[in-house]
Image (cartoon, rainbow, N blue to C red; front, side, top):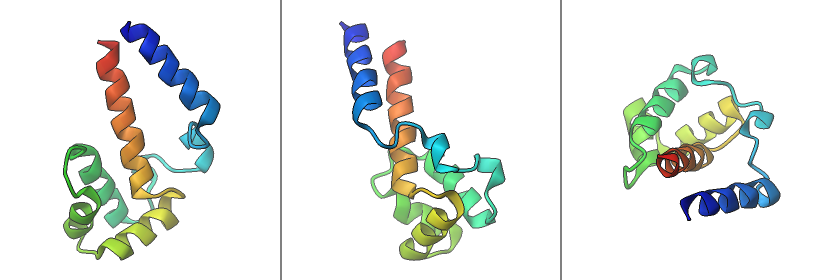
Length: 99
């Protein structure tokens, strides 16, 4: 049953998600971010996927306002912090389903 659900979710993502290939967005890997604050914020986000206010707290960790962090992140990566979080959470969920 889990495999059927997993296959269904993969097909759904492949068919309907415009974000299914994040690499096409031109987003650099974490080591390639130009701004150290974005690098630090990204690392924080990926370590705190279950935080109830992840973007606010990542911004605070970097010494930035939420709006400034969001704008800097988008400029540096070509995607929003929310998209990064959703992608990381989905990857974690798929990994859990595979077990």
